[in-house]
Amino acid sequence: MNWITYPLLLADLSTEWTEWSSGFEPDQRFILSIVGIGCATGVILGLAGIISGTMSSVHRRRIETEMKRDLVERGMSADEITKIIESASPPEDATQRWIASWAKCKKH
Image 1 (spheres, rainbow, N blue to C red):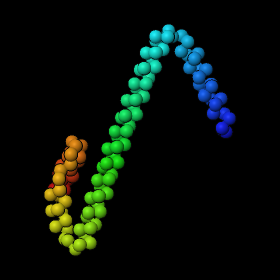
Image 2: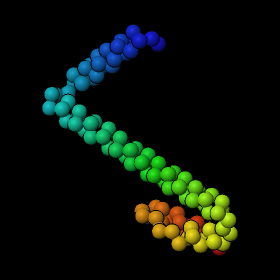
Image 3: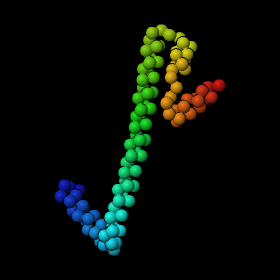
Image 4: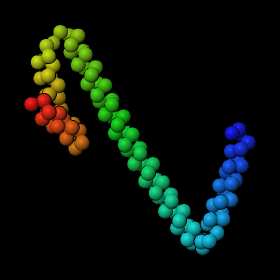
């Protein structure tokens, strides 16, 4: 495909939408458009929330790993590092607390 075919594809989609929506009254088309925009907004916001949470978790793990490396470079023992990590502030959200408690149970 080249740059000339994209406008043609959009024109085809526009024509198909016009033909499909011609069976609806203008009020029905308006409601259908509002519902479609609402659904698309919900999907976009949901994906943004998932991506944001994942990025935050990755960042938190990266910081924790860097801290562990720093403690090892300072010459601390594994027991001292474990005490420091376990005494860190608990995770804020329910998912992170559940993961932390699950990880602690798995150690024993």
